[in-house]
Length: 577
Image (cartoon, rainbow, N blue to C red; front, side):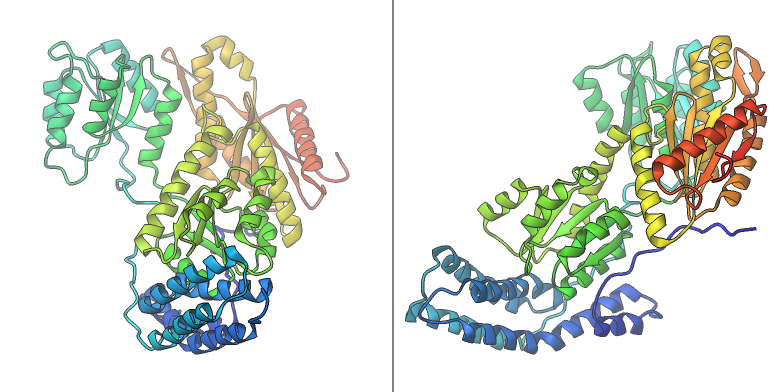
């Protein structure tokens, strides 16, 4: 039987053979990344004399009787690189002198006039000082290991929910619906009972109203009391009829992580609980670094990887298109000054690509001129970090920017009921995945799933029950499929699944097992239980050349499953569809 591929590893970075030797030398170190940073600093120090020699050669080439745009730009770019990298690699004095020299060169670049004798002498003095301070090396700052994706999260795995609600009917409704989704629920109708229970049950999620018969702000007050003295706050979801700013503010102050208005949207509630109690590790943030300096890209790659991020670094901006399509980053770190193509031009190219128009672009440059920074952001950038940037500052800035971007992106591409990709997003993702599979000559399977007789479920039990059925199949697919598999709600009761690096036979086996388990789930409606099944059609990229024909083939295979009696999986092939 074919073997399914597991989660893909980090993508490699481009670099010279010498850098590769440095990385290989520390692969067995107990703290590989710290050792890697130290050796990178040693490598930087070793190449510094050659870099300074190249700077001197460019300076000597500059004519003294006319303006030479090309050589002056080369000189500025090399000095700019030193000003942004010196401190990172243990040469803070070198970075300071390089920044002074860069500022001087920028002024002359704006004027574009022949340098007079005094100006040449001033630049020559600064160049001499560069050589002197290059002999002074201090200890580079290292960074503690931080997984930015996990910062602020409670230990995963607890699934016990305390519902504090004085309305017995609403409390019971929440109890039934949460239990249906696998949560252990305890209901408390009074604040005193809840307060007593919390003394011996710290690891729970609390869901509470604000107003109670004995106290209009009772929910706020008791949570404030419970949170005092705790190292890790209890996660609290407020479910209330209050919608004024003051109530929301007080809820935030006592540790409220979500604020839902009555009548509660059960889909939003389950989404938040699933996020809190997920046992899956958070997905790594994906960062693309574009900088012509191999030392800079290697240094910042190491810093971000140490924070749990996945990094692709390229030193040639002409490779950015290929990296965008293959790597699909969550954020781009982009240098401003590079040979042949500057960062502002790269940003403008990226912003013309519909698939990447919303990806955050953060310029990472030693450019200190505010007008230049604003111009860069006006041409497509979202933020500007000035080199040298502290490791913790870099991690926090990148992490926070990605986190916010993912939230906004999720609102645009996610189905509100299931949290899966919506129709448009899953089709766009399929096109990217098919293109990548064909480039890499790897298998890929695409499945269309449809809940059988779903109209009868809605007609018999009502739309809220139908929504729960849709939610249950979405959760089952997410639980049983791999992290790298992509799931979308194609429309209504129809779903789509992209199984990368998986052939049709294996995909059929996996989805058939899920189909069998789903058909045995018992759904509850007005104390009556019922079962539902689904049908599935599968096509693989080896038989169908592009995303359109692949999708059409899977849809036709699904139709065959339906007319053959439903509750089964049918594979498409190039001959039968």
